[in-house]
Amino acid sequence: MNAQADGPASGPVPWDKPFALKLLADLMRIRRMEERCAELYGQQKIRGFLHLYIGEEAVAVGALNALRADDNLVATYREHGHALVRGLPMASIMAEMYGKREGCARGRGGSMHLFDRATRLYGGNAIVGGGLPLAAGLAMADRMQGRRALTACFFGDGAVAEGAFHEAMNLAALWKLPVLFCCENNLYAMGTAIERYQSQTDLCVKASSYGMPATRVDGMDVVAVHEATQAAAELVRDGGGPMFVEYRTYRFRAHSMFDAELYRTKTEVEAWKARGPIHGYTARLKAQGLLTEDEFLAIDAAAQAEVEQAVAFAEAGTWEPVEDLLKDVTTPVGAPAP
Ligand SMILES: Cc1ncc(C[n+]2csc(CCOP(=O)(O)OP(=O)(O)O)c2C)c(N)n1
Ligand SMILES: [Mg+2]
Image 1 (cartoon, helix red, strand yellow):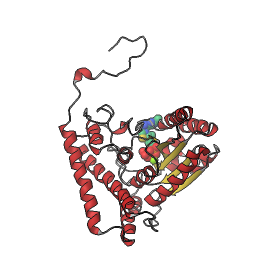
Image 2 (cartoon, helix red, strand yellow):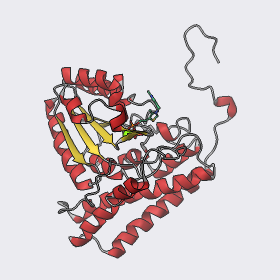
Image 3 (cartoon, protein in one colour):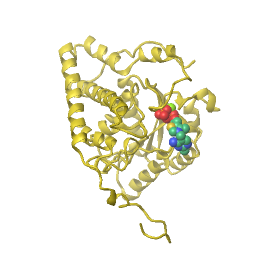
Image 4 (cartoon, protein in one colour):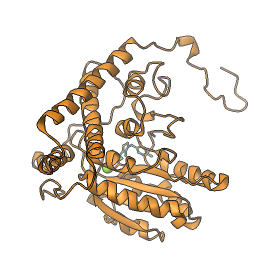
């Protein structure tokens, strides 16, 4: 139904070797980190919700490598890869997943709420569509403070059916706020295919209806993602107002760790895996003489070593004492203090 099995992305890679291999390393770091997270979940080292990004890595890697360090970033609960590419140490991400004090949100957020003020990662978010109004607000703050940065807001196709999407798109377009709306369209919202919950399945049409430029790109192709995001970011940064980019992608794993995947066929999943973001890119790099098999193995080994160091760091981390649990918890006006 949704399969678009036209083979892996192809074509020249327009980058010098260091940059090309940096992006390959980012893809591998996310993949290896999340494969390990799945194992740790089985061992109950990571608990609660866990949404893996496996299959979608080219979006975060291509897009975030096209942005600047002083741009703001807002993400969803499927944000481990975004946090990593943004520059958070893998160890602090892993410790957060464990719920340890050494985590980037001091163990209070967990997988869905990675947050880091220093790198301007304004959070994962458990609420579908919840990040869009935050992004509009951050962009408005930048405008008022005269900062020439943009806010990149990542969200899924499911968010496009939420009121918050339309409110944020409307105000961002009306006030020409510097927001880059990055829609990760993986064709499903939990177990519901896009044809079953969207009246208009062409999401660019929805964005265009707010008078905002919109473009669609192959989210399995890290080169195409980078080029489209760079062009869009330039437009937004130059004061052109917000822009919408739809990245057509696919998750290879279940929605979360509790999902029997009865809503899609194995054939469809396999067809998308054939377009996987890592092996297609690797083949192109090799064909162009930018990568040898030994270099690939070294990048993979480095990613796996980083994962093991991150796990050791999380294991050695500390739990917050029970008596501190209500610290930083806001008390509603009129309620007795905790
Ligand atoms: C406001 C709100 N409604 C419902 C949910 C339950 N929920 C969690 S994930 C999800 C699907 C979202 O799909 P999409 O935005 O496409 O993101 P994906 O999981 O595919 O990355 C839903 C409905 C929620 N978290 N928040
Ligand atoms: Mg989705």
